[in-house]
Length: 329
Image 1 (tube, rainbow, N blue to C red):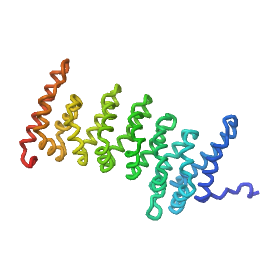
Image 2: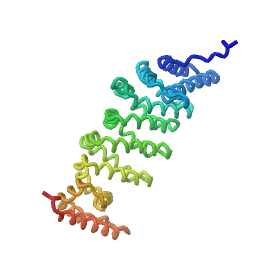
Image 3: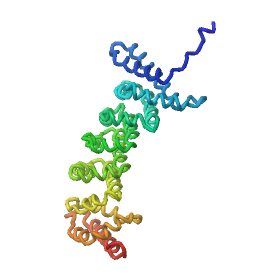
Image 4: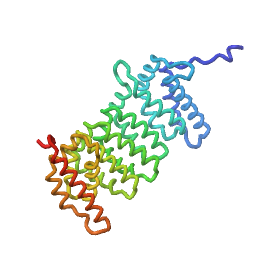
């Protein structure tokens, strides 16, 4: 009788990945009319994805096997399971998607024979990055895909692809979506792209200055207060990056920014912990900046006095910096 209670042998990594693929492909073969068959197929997918997580992190009793993790990572790539996992995200249940996000984070970090296999796979299938980004248009899976995309862009080559891709422009739409959770997640990804990879961002801003700031100005003037506040804070962050000093100098020298430029100068100048690079830039360009500020006017309105007070404060601080030794050579 023991035959009937014998536990099934755990799947090998190769068998598990094959089972994941087969169960995902079974989803495609079901129609809406076949509700029970679809439910069964979804249960099979969930079971296999849970098994993948157990293989990656253990089950709380037994530690995971490093060899199995490496083999699982290889098989996920070699069997082309990644596109299937991504494509079927919309049909998976919320909890299954959550587990898959966790697995993806772990898989990307796995190095096999000095190669990050999943990162390399993504480098060879860059359209998958575009897919994840475009998923912000689907509020059901937007946050899950956003998490997976942020894991991807920790890899410099993958981040650079997104920054240079035509898809990057979609962020200006997604950060203004009416769904708060989705727009916030999109902004988090947008921020990571602009602050975590200074060399790629500096190169991009230098090459696409006009196009980028044409779009960015709309965020700074957004009807949504949160978007305006976050965008202004982010602007100060990436402009203060030392590699972007030439971008900052160009930006604050453009007279058409008026009050916006005043806000930015206030951020740069009034900051008591200004980086040395910023002090040098402000001091070296003090004559140009002072002349520019002198001619700035908010026009007529109730904010006129406040504008003039802030302008005077900024000018005094720039003059003070210009008198400091060793800042102007």
